[in-house]
Length: 378
Image (cartoon, rainbow, N blue to C red; front, side):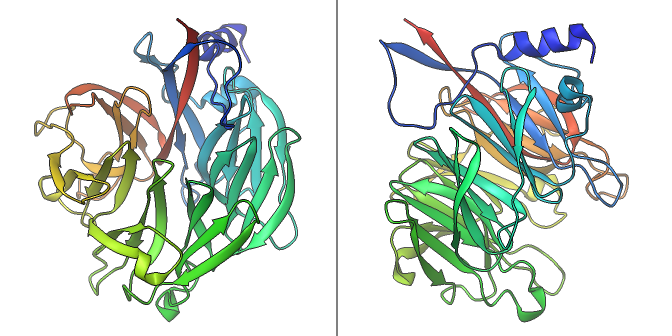
């Protein structure tokens, strides 16, 4: 790796970290966001490995956006099937589904610290949530694994539902989306959600019989209110998803909010993308709802057709937890109007009023965003 590349990455993320415990040390500090990484899943069919793209708020530039920042820092490929990255205890953890690996790296430089290799029955990491120096990672074989972030070791595994994917904190509980994703032939009949009590590390599984045909996939939370995307497909393979709020441990506590394909939560705002399968950009909606009343508040981004502000094929919405900027991930489109899944994707940045700020190119298959927190003394 060239020294200049390393210096740029180090300068880009200097002091950036996210603490995953609830206690802060020392005196007063102001929290800000110094930048973010996009987690690019790559494309296994096209033999394109996963990658990371780094963006710096201060300079307004990405560090060689179409170059894998992980490879630049370490000289090796990230691997296959990158899903998500979470920063905890001063380290960043990257879940690699296909490679069955969790990388542990320095957030400032992306230099490898260590790796965690799941084994036994609990393998194939998907999504993560963090609290009190512990990570909780869904394993697609049917488990949630607890990881001690002070030792970078898996300490225990909890059996949950079939093929769990999304996971998020809701108070002292975890909400887990059990997709039953490997069982499409049975109509995803074994899907639902698991509610994991962190104090006892036990779970209550709620089967999804309330919304037949929809299977749980993605979870988002503001730390208190948890929402789940439940997807289904009609005979033309059109996505017909709904968004539900999970307010307790019974099926009656799962309440439909609206239709939608991707979500994020910031404060009392629920951001919802509703994107029909291979639908035209003008038919996609970007609405914000109140987390309590479910009242619609309007569109959360402003677009001009044919300009960089336009989202062509959305693949996720992520809200800066400090300033409220909105990062939208999207594919470019091929000449036939389908998603260019083997070409670089892009991220559009909007302010919290929905005004377009900037577009940056990312690696192939950008699927998640990890914001880099920073504490600055007043």
